[in-house]
Length: 355
Image 1 (spheres, rainbow, N blue to C red):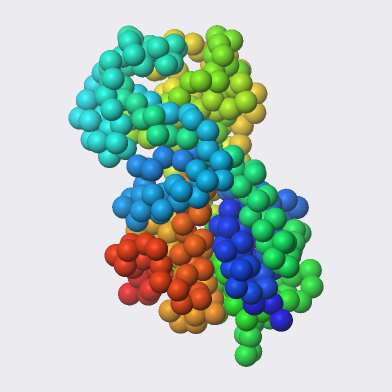
Image 2 (image 1 turned 180 degrees about the vertical axis):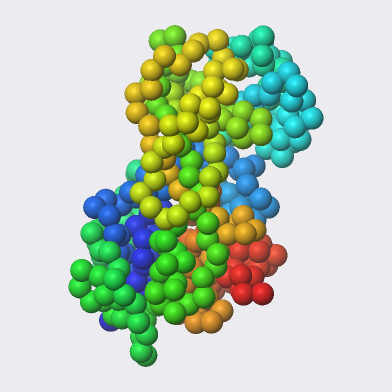
C-alpha cells in the first residue's frame, strides 16, 4: 500500500513528493515519456520575489533560502521597458515589481539594442535570477528514490475509485492511502475521475520563440526584458534570445503548440522597442499556465475528502514557489504548523474553492 500516490511529474508533483517521502512511501505517476514534459519543461525559469499576487510573493519569499542553499540560482536581472506613451502604466508596474527607474542610457548599457526612438521608460531589478530547472526536477526525483519511493513515466491514469483507500488504474493498478493531484492543466479531470469537485482550473497558452543573438552580440550578461503591460518578454538562453508575446489565451488541457499569428504579433511588439530586426526564428513552442479564478495556488487536502490533496493552480509561478508550496502541502498533510502565516495559508488552501 502506497502512502502518497502523486499524479503529475512536473515541478509541483516532484517537489511535493520529495517533501512527503520523509513521512511515508511515495509513488509519482507521469503520463508522458519524460518528467516535466508539459509546463515545467517550457518555463521561462526566472526567480523574482516581486512577481505575483500577495500569497505568491509570500511563497517566493519563503522559497528564497532553499534556492540559495542549494545553488539553483544564477544572476540575471530584469529590465522593465515602457514606450514613450506608457508612463502611467510603467510607473504602476515598476512599483509592483519593486524595480528602480534608470535612465535610458544606463539601460542601453545593459541591453545595447534598446531603441531610444521608441523606448521612453526603463527600470531595473537586480534580484531576478535564473533557475536551473532541470537540476531542480532531477534533484527532487532523486530524493524520492533515495527515500524508497518510485518515479514512473508512461503512466496514463485510466480510472480512480475509492473504497477504504484509493485504487488507481494506470499501466498497472496502484493502491494508495492518499492521492496528490499535481496534474497541472489536467487537475480538474483527475478530480472528477476521483469523484472530487473540480476547482475550476483554466489553462492559458503562452507561446515562445528562440531567435539568434541580435546583431551577433554576446548576450550572457544581459538581463531579461519585460514589456510594460506584460505584452512581451525577451530572455537570454544559451547564447540565443527567447521572445514571448506573453499571451494568455484560454484553452483546454493538451500538448500545446505556438500560434503563428500570436507569435508574430509578439515579435513585432518586441521589435518595436529594439534596433535589431528579427530575421529568423530558429524554433518555437508553447506551454500551458493554469490558473483558478483568484489567480493563486490551491494547496493542501480537499475539504470533501482530506485523502485527496491538491498541488494545483501554479500559473506562471510553479518553479519559484515550489520549495515553499511543497513544504506547505506536506505540513498540512501531516498536521505540522506551517511556516507561512495563517492569512496566506488561508489564501492558498482548497477550502476557499468550496465557498
